[in-house]
Amino acid sequence: MSSADSQDRPDPEYVQRNPPSPSRKRKEKDGYVADFYPGFVRRLAVRRAGQEVVVYEQAPDDPFILPAGSDKPWDTSEIVVQGGPSARDVRLVVHDPHQEIDSIVIRLRGRSPRLAGGGEDEEIEVLDGTVLCPPMCPPIIPVGGGG
Image (cartoon, rainbow, N blue to C red; front, side, top):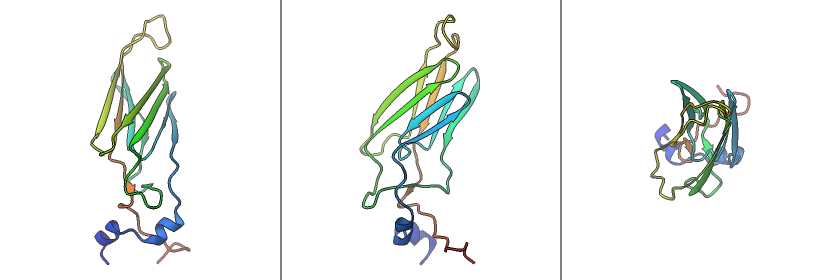
């Protein structure tokens, strides 16, 4: 069987040895906290004053493992971003049953200079394109590390 075939039909042992990925993931970086469904989010970044903070980025060799019998992620996803210099508190619910969304950019107004973080505008960018298993399941490494 070629590696392309194994991508189309994941080895059942892989799914048995690797339970479904958790339905929520929480990541923190540079004062920002993101909580999200990792079956939708491949990358989440915040931009402010010409700087970008990548709060989360899925590693290509770490697929989101779908529950047994599922062939796609959930239709609805909630993304929460909090913190940062402006003490943001943003919650976005996305309904994408046909997996048509590629990216979402949320532009946030600067706050009054009297409030935390001053008047800087920010952007939150969420990219989909999550690596899913199935179909993109890595090969099983035999117990003991293989060859």
